[in-house]
Length: 219
Ligand code: DX5
Ligand code: ZN
Image 1 (cartoon, rainbow, N blue to C red):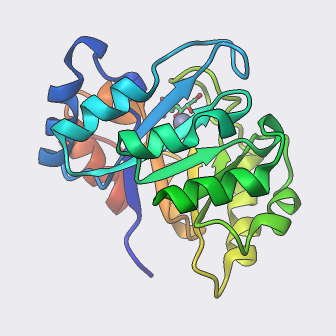
Image 2 (image 1 turned 90 degrees about the horizontal axis):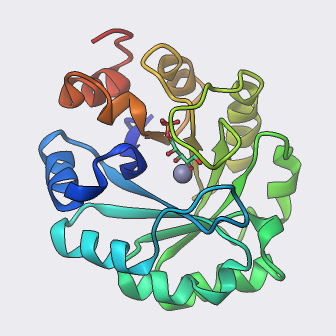
């Protein structure tokens, strides 16, 4: 089994020092950078758009994992890829044509993934599984960092991993990851773990990333 990859969410970083945040993530051995794009409509919060992704791209060579929490993502996916996104994920219910949106992302040259909210069953991913590079499970209802993990989502990791077995599709989880619940996610075979507060609010973020990867449950 490959080592779990950690994708710290810069939503929990200092917005006045994003260049520094991604440079730190390289030093701290993060694998990906998770970028939370919110439009104030699909979720009750507004964050940032393509200019931020483009600015991050200029400051890091880390893989940029762009999570779109926006209505009709098809309007913007190509511009996010042009800005430097390596992976674009979106919520299929927000799109008028999720299959076409996946194709747009891929033809623009990035990897494509869909995101399932906590109340969306894994069966929704079935029809997309041969088209996408990744499926991301939300561990919280999207909108804010630092929320508490919804425990029922843990079992969905195993259901999703059974679905992706033998396929070239990664399983990612976003929201509510802590040093305490991470080891069970790793045991269930998760490939990529997003961590916002667990990394950026830790007294020693580099050690927090190391602990998440190796199943150590306290700093
Ligand atoms: C939630 C975002 C998550 C969030 C994760 O709407 O999509 O990526 O920033 O933050 P933590 O790990 O603090 O729950
Ligand atoms: Zn996210």
